[in-house]
Image (cartoon, rainbow, N blue to C red; front, top):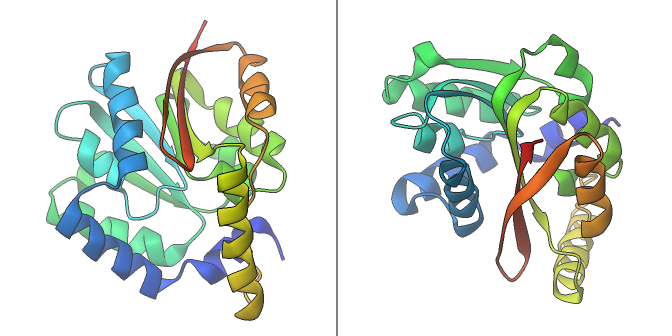
Length: 211
């Protein structure tokens, strides 16, 4: 099963509806809020956004009012795409959003280059993160920002327990903790320098700017 199909199977309509209700009640969670903060700190105005693994579209919903002019929303789950579209219509954002269903490693070549590329908790979904980083960053003109697990014992135990739960439920989808230094060195090798880092107990939010 491909990564795209695995994500599609796990992240269905039930998950999407639950995530939307949580967002409408509580706003962005802490990690996503830190990613938004990193984007705003970069100081780009009316930029174009490519949101990869965009889910229900929290990043674009939050950034549309002041920070970005348009967004391309990429997600492997059709259910999440439909929920995101409906929320865009409700917020009168539909004319500025384009939706692409698929795995970024397969559809990157069809996408226009954007000023900002964001991956919020996407790296951890890919065993082969080199392909993910290489193809996603190729679509970035100025700012590339990601959130992914910190490479520490607490994160590894949390993710091991999460995967163990999926084993008992006979779910194929798995999450991964990748080496921080390796992930960020691959980004730097493409001509980007890190400009900020924010962290929670589990997650690391890093922003990069093209040199």
